[in-house]
Length: 143
Length: 58
Figure 1 (cartoon, rainbow over the protein chains, first blue to last red):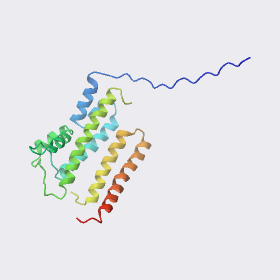
Figure 2: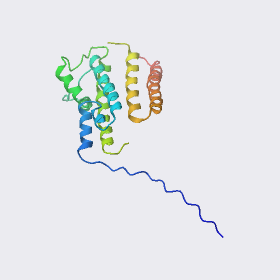
Figure 3: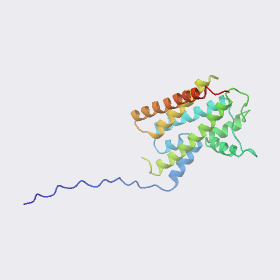
């Protein structure tokens, strides 16, 4: 008499995430652009949101203190378009700095000018990544 | 305002490493591990590149 076959292991399955469409992912991304961490705060990652806010803000403020440049597009300098896009990624930090700064073009003769530019660009790009991350979390693509 | 190049570079590496360890990992242990790897890669890598460039005239 043959023994009954051992039950086969259930097939591996990944629980399906229901993608959430609608305003919430876009709202999370928009809030993330406005201020670093706001999008993550909306989707419930409160502790990480505060840390993101501190890190990105610190990077931006250091860039300003190092007398870096808040880029704007310049005719004949196509790379400034990319740089402008990057810096505008910082949202309100960038907008308020442009309004309040007496020297948004930076001090090119400063020893730390290049570093300041790097920090400002990096802060903006970090925040763009945070926008994408907040969108993915709100859309259910990332747990 | 610090003007020491190495210090500024290390500060940049610190911010980048903390940011990406928070973004790419969950759990304190994994985050710390990635932070250490990224920070060392950036700082040691920069020093290595600096020494590689040393023989070349400015």
